[in-house]
Length: 146
Length: 254
Image 1 (spheres, rainbow over the protein chains, first blue to last red):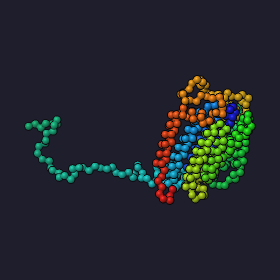
Image 2 (cartoon, each protein chain N blue to C red):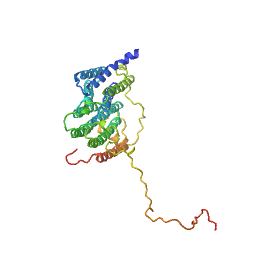
Image 3 (spheres, rainbow over the protein chains, first blue to last red):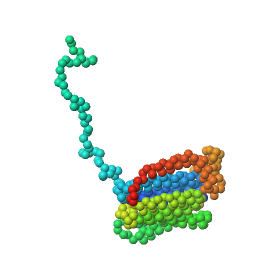
Image 4 (spheres, rainbow over the protein chains, first blue to last red):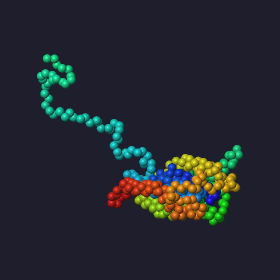
């Protein structure tokens, strides 16, 4: 494989990567965003196999197999995330998730915060005696002179 | 001045491609899609003329151009299609074309496994989710209003132009360096007698042997055994995570 063929393959890989990037940046559908990420991975895979052919060793193809593995993991996790997000809002629009807080959750800061809990005195219900008699001796305190 | 004349010709197909992607993006008002399609085809043809002249096997070059054009065209149609179901099907076509490129790069095992994993598992799952989530059939409003299509595609094509320019400086995609064949070797020359471990595959002289199962398996389970184990662990963790994240559904609801 000559450098010409390698370079043509690199151009195709770069074009696929950039098209996937455009899709990732512009589309608002959650599923299309994930598909565009897979398109970028395809561009990278074309580059890796082209270099593998050019150098005449299988390492590029081994790396492509790893890319395939991680892409499968990513697709599974992303689809389960998308399903659980869809169940919350009934829509696949990514703009609905622009802020991380949710509207139906209570606000944790601000004026609606609950007042601080005051611990009641444990001896409140015991009878209060009026103090009488001598001042008791305190150990190490001031000693009363007799 | 000479420099801009030499390299400025690269800007024409890139600008055409940017205009066509921006024009074809779904929008509220109806645009005639034929204009964008013509601009896209013109830019692809101009880029193809700038590619290096084909050398060597004729059938191989024809196959390469067919697969590459299919992949790029279907990718463009995928990111500009309003309907997410059609976008997923275009992505399946991109996958098939990329598998053709893998075959040309003498990676038959990789092509087969990519078809199985992508077209057999990932696309089907994506279609499943799309059809569960959008049962109405009509395209949703958020699919017709992309976010900043002109700006995003402009930035992306600036990146593409930078990549092309770098490749041009490296080897010359316009035929500048067509006479001098680059050395089909390695960037870093490794001494021939160094093997990382006894299972490692020694570099072979037969170019048809690169993608064979024997060489791939020896490389995977010899040089990259630890990475293979890590990848298996990542798969297991991703499976457990997907099961944990996926919503429990009651009867009849998604």
